[in-house]
Amino acid sequence: MINIGRINNLKISKLDHYGASLSIEGGEAEAGELVVLNKNLPPNAKEGDYVDVFVYHDSKEHLTATSQKPKVQAGEAAFLKVVQVNNVGAFLDWGLPKDLLVPFNQQQVSMLVDNDYLVFVYLDEDTNRVVASSKLNKHIQHGATIYKTRQAVELIISDITDIGYSAIINNQHWGVLYFSDVVKPLKVGQKLNGFIRKIRDDGKINLCLEAIGYDKVDSLSTKILKQLEISGGFIPLSDKSAPELINQRFGVSKKSFKMTIGTLYKKRLITIAREGITLIGKANDS
Image 1 (spheres, one colour):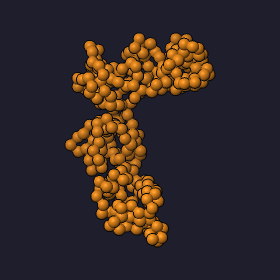
Image 2 (tube, one colour):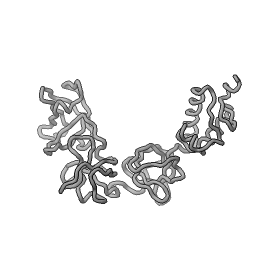
Image 3 (cartoon, helix red, strand yellow):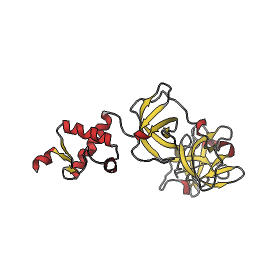
Image 4 (spheres, rainbow, N blue to C red):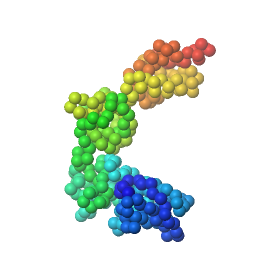
């Protein structure tokens, strides 16, 4: 069995000067094999090897595979550029020779060449072809019970609103990042790691970009202590420093930084002065 529009791990059953036959359990292709040209195989591939290949339909609508990795797979969202528009729809550059189709009826707004759009890629059940849609609400769900507070997730920024950023969580659900939880501006289409801050009573999900509570402190503590060692025991940042300087060095908010150095101070690992923080051992040495 193969997953069209996804990377599959398939066995090379036959290899010659033309290409390879990849075995398909369940016989999704004729004779249970998929023929792949040598140029689309990994270097030094041998008969009997299992190879990771992306399975899709080529420009002649033949089922084929390639070791070339696309920018996005079926079941995922991505920010892609339109390279052509014709009487069928818009075509996006997704890193493969055959561009990705967005049919007219799957366009939230009319797409224009050279513009970038956030789309969801999926396997059309009627045509068995991989296509994309910018009508994200058809594919991304509101509300979810599968997440837990403080859980690490992958995010894609989808929109900028009056209160913050709308984001897609793990290619499946909607969430919101409030401006107060973001240190620097984000862009539509930007991918980043985040955390579940809160699941509200109405099922909507609040997000944040920094670990919550002690998870955040422990992670940042390690980073600060490592930087102190590298810097000879002193860093010219303190609870009085500008938020921009703190973010530039550690990529966190001033609130998180203050909380963390406060914990390190209570553990007697550092001293804090207006000029900066000093590792206790280094302070005693001086």
